[in-house]
Length: 80
Image (cartoon, rainbow, N blue to C red; front, side):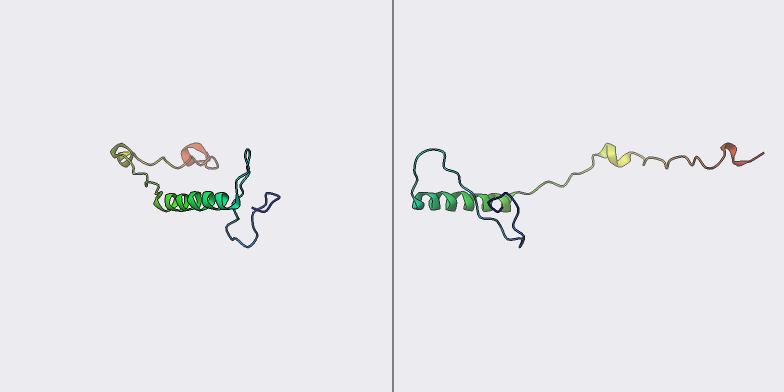
């Protein structure tokens, strides 16, 4: 994200934003923090896998819903 909160137009990953609330960390401390957090985030995002939803036996035996009734066809299919 750019400083105004907009996403980068070129699709590149935005630089992380760090806001120091207390204290006065040195540039080396901030660099170490970003390196550790960035590495952990990368490792975690690579290992994260969503399980594929598997239908239960009950769901597999259920019939599909029927098609909606056609309201344009008269009841009994004859016009009299």
